[in-house]
Image (cartoon, rainbow over all chains, first blue to last red; front, side):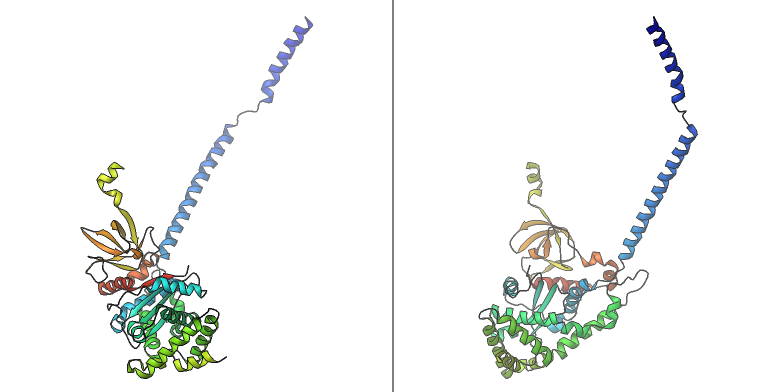
Length: 280
Length: 112
């Protein structure tokens, strides 16, 4: 009986305190929270919209960039070749020599790594061989077919000539000569709402002409190239001898063939080179 | 598979031209007539895939392009990277023609 009374009392007390522990639902707060949430959402949307708009504008402006130095040199070399086709005659018919793979293997053997190169045969006796300015990764070499034919150069000798030009190119003699001050501000610049002055391409083309058709390399530069060739080739068996043989061939040709009388002006001189190569 | 063979699609491969400009010839020879000069990144459907040349469809004609000038993936083109610079240069059709020819004449290699 006592147990029953206690149970009833416990039930009544529990029932009375139940309502006191439970907090009241504050609808006002919920409304504020919901409002805040919606505001936050719309704020996020507007921020995202502004970010996308800014990004779109940035992408739009980027379209007005001029090429970076890395992209410019390979592009400009080709531009110059197209403009000088009549002088260089690179569209003449030449026999297929398959120089790409052989030269690649040779350059790798000489420790040249991660480079791309193009060789263009030209039908010109004045320009015998030349490496155009490079971006450090892409190299372009010109090679006179009449010159190769007159010397009867083997694939190895052609690769040696290309390697010699690669060293000249790496030393930056040609590139430094054609570097005009306007180029620094032109390359990698943005021309949004501005007009590009393409006169710079003509000026640069003229500098190329001046170097390739008139100036060439000086004694000091030739000495540095020849001694580096000597140092590098002497590490590989037979290559220094092959190089000397090739320079001898060039020396003999330029002394007897009037077509190549200007060779010494551009590359002074095979005779001196032989002297530098034989000095111990 | 059967459907693909019947529709002739089984033998088609998609390529993109990778040089700044490239030429499509009427024969598999760099000295043959030029049918078209294509901008870098032009999509082409290969009809026949040989060692050096790929036979492609250009509008209603079929022609040949050197395999080494094609890429299976869309290349990084200077025209796309610097559109304002390239359009403002206003290259004439003759320059584009010779630029395309230039790539036919290059011996290319690498030391990778």
